[in-house]
Each structure stands twice: as C-alpha cells, then as structure tokens.
Image (cartoon, rainbow, N blue to C red):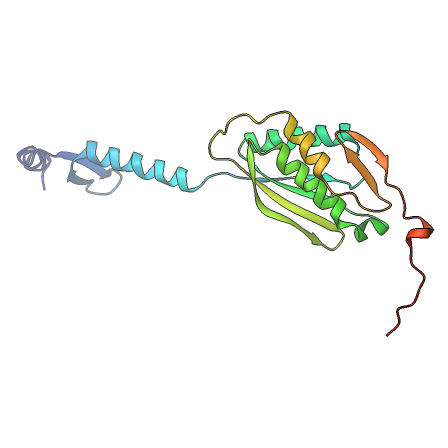
Length: 191
C-alpha cells in the first residue's frame, strides 16, 4: 500500500502509522495506538522487574564457644544484611565433642533471632545437619517498633544451662559446675 493511503487510513481511525521493519523491502508498517503500546510495554517491564527480585543468600558462621564481642559484631553484620534485603543463613559449626551439645548452638541461634527481630524473621528454624546447625533468616517486609534493650539480657537470663558447659548470663561467661560425686547414684535398681 502506498504511504499516503496508509497515513490516510491511520488518521481516519485516529491511530498511528508505525514502521515495524524498516530494513525489509518494502518497509513494513503497522496501524496502531503508539502511546497505548508504549504504556503497556512499560507496565510489562515493571511487572517483570517486580517478579525477578534479586535476593541473594549471605552466610554467617558462628562457633558454640563464641565470645560476646565476636557475637555482637557478627550479629550486627547479619542485621545489616537483612536490612539490605538479603536472606541470611546462620551456621553454627561444631568441632569434636561439641556436637553432643546441640543445645548450645540452639541457644546461640535463639539469641541471634531475638537480636535481629526488628529487621528479620526466622524462615527456617535451626536444625542439626551433620556437624553444623543452620537457620535461615529472611528480611522483614515492614518496619516494626523498636525493641527494648532489655530483651537480649532477658533472653540470656532465661536460657537453660548445660552441665559442664559454658553459661552466659547478660554478657558474663562462667563455667557451669560439674555434678558432684554425691549427686551421682551408684545403686543398681531392684526389680
């Protein structure tokens, strides 16, 4: 169709004449509402960006006998990752006989969850996998009210102590007393 006829047809329908393939012989054009097409294209691009969120998983490794200063530093870094929108995999690494005391690792994971509660939430609870205990934290969607400073101290005070392990209470670390020989019964049960 000649160009003047195509332009006349587009104007009669109150549409635009858009060149689709300029290198073809003869050039290919389409009659359409160009502004509407641009708007729909922009909406499709927005929708695809929304669906393709770029969430990476960061990992932070702890040990059961971690000091208070190292714990605070690593936990601050976990909170920073969560506030940036990343998921965080927290790993407690056990060595030797430490693996027989998973409650120590669970207590550390609980402290981390309490400390980062305002910026993240627990997505996967801590579970023992070989010599590692892992927990996954996801960023919080909305900002919650600021938590009180006493929450961490309360969580530490309420944490159960293990026999022969290390007890941490409000930042103070001390060895737990071992059971005395008098407390251990040597009697054999009678039927």
